[in-house]
Length: 211
Image 1: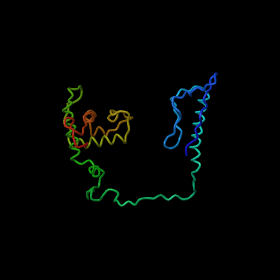
Image 2: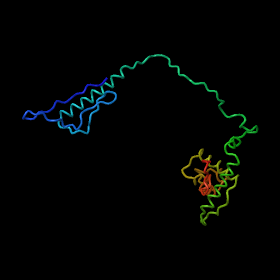
Image 3: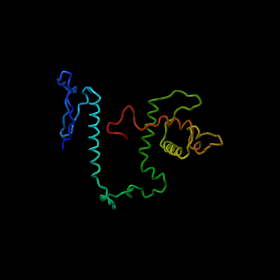
Image 4: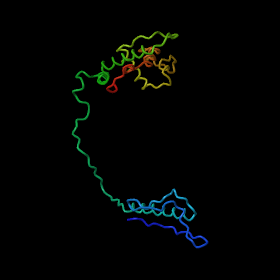
């Protein structure tokens, strides 16, 4: 049902002749029968502005009245749950029979093939971006498969023992000394591997997606 159009009376000059409205285009209706006003028109008086504001207020009140038709009912809501026919959880066939330690389960996701790839690409990235001689630091040596496993273990351990800086894990200060880090890795060696850690050959990136 279309809404009522509030038309403005034509203005009359002193000689009795009617003056045309200052609006560029009259109001029109859309496909739903609602009034669409041309707000680009020149507003010639405060009365016209007030009239249009009143029309907008009437339109919004009509929309709010429709919400009062909604009815809320009390009762127990029972959702419709679709049946699940899958087999959740880790499948027994994926777990080796001799899996007993956390490292065994870690290797289900990071096996030797993947870890060797990380070691190879780390060495490749260092050869592509070499650094010259550094004072008080030994030259680069290619990382090995065993070393990359220890590197990942040390890195995960830093998440359990939080410190402000990487250097603090190798600090000999009695207040923050954590000797296990020095037992498995030299500080500069760890920082070197962290600097060059890589997973793909930048010069020949794969075209079939990420790792």
